[in-house]
Length: 226
Ligand code: HEC
Ligand code: HEC
Image 1 (cartoon, helix red, strand yellow):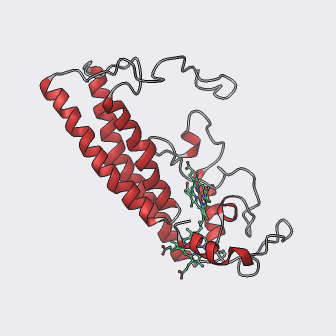
Image 2: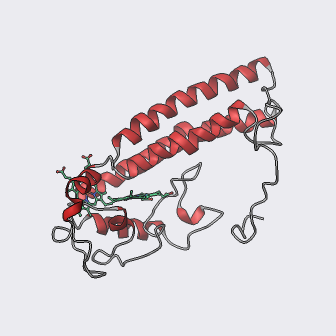
Image 3: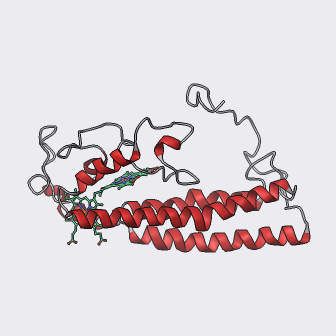
């Protein structure tokens, strides 16, 4: 809703033709700006209609480290990201020129690279070092402040930064995204370095709610991970 596409939908959505027959919903005729379904599901030229909303993705941007969908261990996609990227670009070129669309994906890929290399990988390396040195306790997750900070770095602002960039929402990419990543990263590293330099164990909350219990993944859903 923050993107220009969302603005156009907010202004003109009531006038879109929502009753077009499947496979005939045409930009410029039935609608003016893409909805979620227009980009992720509807057919467009050589890109066929699909109910698999993961199909046109070239990245797994919900994951801690951004990887290709075929590398996502819990649910590895059986496809080739370059083919899927092309399918998404065909959707865009219904309304935009090729250079405009190529530019958008150059930007998205740079955002992914920046997030992976500058924020996620060094934070993960530090977390692993703290576990290895015994300064953080690995038996439970979320019972130490740095575990929460690490989680929020990728799960909260790290996702907003990447998804905001993927879907043209500048405030999410920056203010709720990278800006917050910078603050979180600095706070995480400062505390982590302090523990390393003083060789001090992190405070462990003895009663952190829901930090205990069985975390075995259901075999029916995650057959490949156990
Ligand atoms: C203008 C086209 C467009 C619209 C409209 C759009 N998306 Fe996206 N979406 C994208 C692109 C492009 C990506 C990143 C594709 C890639 O992986 O290269 C993406 C990625 C995503 C992802 C991340 C998946 C992952 O983990 O990698 C989610 C979730 C998502 N979209 C949901 C939505 C929802 C919900 C809406 C409607 C509110 C929406 N999208 C509207 C184009 C669009
Ligand atoms: C149904 C037509 C339509 C489709 C499909 C579509 N867009 Fe757009 N897009 C628009 C319109 C209209 C605008 C507003 C142009 C303007 O402000 O002059 C826009 C704006 C944009 C902007 C500018 C955002 C900003 O904040 O300035 C970007 C980037 C963009 N689109 C990329 C894409 C990409 C990438 C895709 C495919 C994943 C896509 N669009 C699919 C119609 C479309």
